[in-house]
Image (tube, rainbow, N blue to C red; front, top):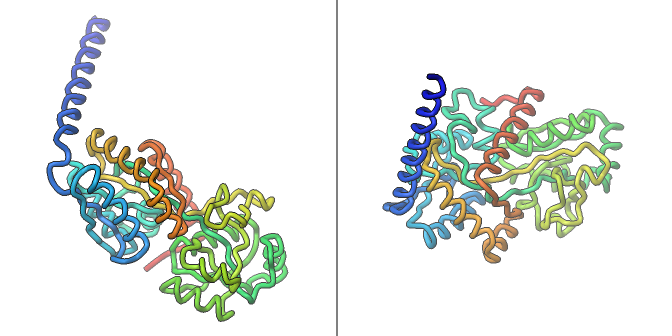
Length: 326
């Protein structure tokens, strides 16, 4: 009898899989039948918005009509919540990022979504390395010299950052990893922080090179080390932490495409293929490079694993540093 029940169970399971497969196939043959919307939880005109529009144009040309829906606010969680609560039908996507999918949910009470459980990952798009960058007030020319200088002057060096943003958390992660005492000074925007770095009123910033590129080229500030696993094509002469004989610290900003949990596999597979194809385009790769970003790509499962790991890493950094936002 148990054997008979097991056979029946297996037969029923096989039938269910076949039905689901047929439903996915039918859906794939008709998708999309209306406009696809990508929610971007950032304001119009910023780097995330511009990059999202590049990929929206590619989807419009290769999959179907695609539009951008900007939903800035509440440290990106407004757009994240809107996407998580949408119908999982393939017509609402989220241009997710290290902020909306890893940092903000750990910082924001009652955020309204879980970065892992609420979404179906589609594909990682790009990442930007973060660099320890110093101004003229810091005499160090290498990261080893910087650490020695910081240890000789505990509590006297400042790093500028918006509260709870990647530049702030990267600084917290770095100082704990190498055992130094540097103090955060909080700014509303990184533009003002960089202005004060140039004026010698701030010592350090931890940021991606996009807003710093021309200043680095002119030698007005210095990038000492990359907080990443490997060197970037953007600043290929700057060593990584591991190359400098230090803890292998990884702190990057990144973005990718996700959909509400439960989105049909057929949609995920088709959109994943389209974005991976876009990332092979020399024009799109050049666009990413202009924004100091490295192309990613890969499978949905690889992106799912990456988001889970990043969420855990940043949550732990927030917990250990005691960072809170109002």
